[in-house]
Length: 364
Image 1 (cartoon, rainbow, N blue to C red):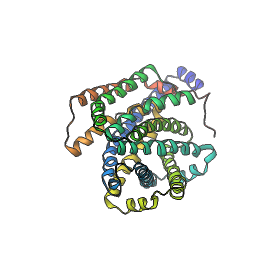
Image 2: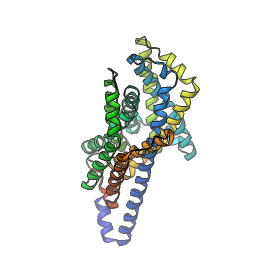
Image 3: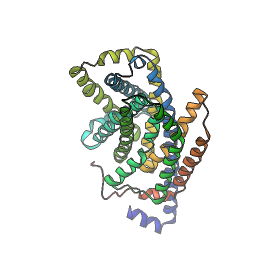
Image 4: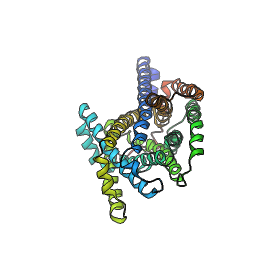
C-alpha cells in the first residue's frame, strides 16, 4: 500500500485514477448498503405476519418452550428459502461453480462463513424472530439498531479496521435517529406487555444485535479472500446444515417437542410458506447487498448505512396497514439521513486506509 501511495504521488495520472477508483468504490458501497436498508425494512412485514399463520398462531401464549421450538423451525425453513433465492442469483451471474470451489476450501475460506452463519442464524435471525414473537416487531427492530456499534468494535479489535471521527459521528447520529423513530412505539409496546415470559423476547433482541454485529465483522474478514455473492450462499449453506443436521435433530431426539410435526405443518401451510418466501426474498438480497457493501466501504460504514432500515420499515408498515407515522418519524428521518450524509461526505480516499493489512490477513 505504501508503494502504491508513493508512486501515485509521483504520477499525477495514477493519482487521479486511484482517486476515481476510491470514489467509485465508495459510491457503490453506499448504494449496496442503502439496498440493504430498504430490503431489511421490508422484511419486518412478512416476518411479523408469519406469526399470525398456522401453525404458529395456534401455539398458546403460555407454551414458551413450544414457541421457541417453532421459532427454530421457522428460522430453518426461512434459511432454506433464502438459499433458493441465492442459488437463483448466482445462477444468473454464472457463479455456481465459484460457490462450489469456495465451499470445499473450508480451512482457508469457508470456515469464516461457517462462523458467520452461527452468528447470523442461530443467534441473530433466531433472536429477531424471538423478539417478534414474545414482545413485538417494534422491539425486535429497535434492539437491532445497535448492531453497527458491535460490528465496528469487533472489526476494530479483531483486525484493526479503522473508524474515523466522521464515521463515528455519523454512526451515532443514525443510531439515535432510529431510537427516536422506534422509542415511543417501544415504550407503548412494553407497557402493554403482560406476558411473564417477555424476557425471552428481550433476550432475543440482544441476541439479534450481537449476532448481526459480530457476523458483519466475520463476513468483513471473509471478504478479503472471496466473492460476496458466493460468500453469502456459503453462509446460508452452513446455517441450513447447523439447523437441519445438528440443532433440530437434537431437539427431536432428546425432547418431546413435536419438531417433525411443526416442520410438516409449516411446509404444507400455503399461507405460512407465502410469508416465508416473501421474507426470504427480502433477506436473500438484503444479505447480498450487505456483504457487497463490506468489501467496498468496510464493516462500520456498511452496517451504519444499513441501519436506515428503521425508516424503510415504518414506510412499508404504513403502506400495508395505512397507519401513517407520527411527528417523531419526521424527526428520526432527519437524524438518520443526516447521519448518512455525514458518513458519505467523508473523502473517498480514506476508504483506502480502512484496514491495517499488516496486522490481520486471512490465511490463503
